[in-house]
Length: 179
Image 1 (tube, rainbow, N blue to C red):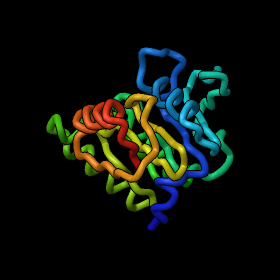
Image 2 (cartoon, rainbow, N blue to C red):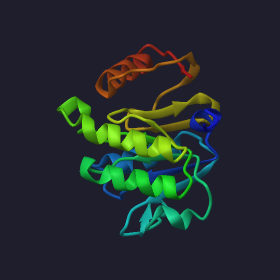
Image 3 (cartoon, rainbow, N blue to C red):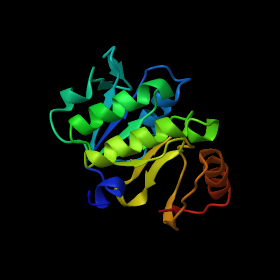
Image 4 (cartoon, helix red, strand yellow):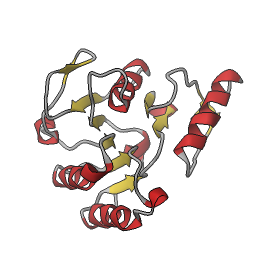
């Protein structure tokens, strides 16, 4: 079992599905991580490579060359299982799956397959269909939510990504910090 510290205080984060297209979630997640003050290593992963927000994009997770603590997955649902397998093969400790299209749409079997594979390979999954991971302890905003989240002492756990986005928006308006 992985130490949950690496979920909330990861030393490195890979964004599977990172993109230079500012209209896509893979761009927003990278942007939020880079502007949140996160001090760990950031690995945008896109099979096309290139550069995303000034950082070289890896063509594969294996190019990170070390164990990644947290992988944030923002690719189409039909590609997620293979990404989870790749994460497990590369010793990623936690995968946060932002992608939707699983049990909320009746695709519970695929969701169970992902979780079962990850568990069998000593990796833990958060999600799918989540807003992402925010941690004031790591100054990490690995979400597709607003970039103006403040650090504070209120923890928010939500089964619903959409509800989490609404609540986060309210915390910003009300000047409430999140942990």
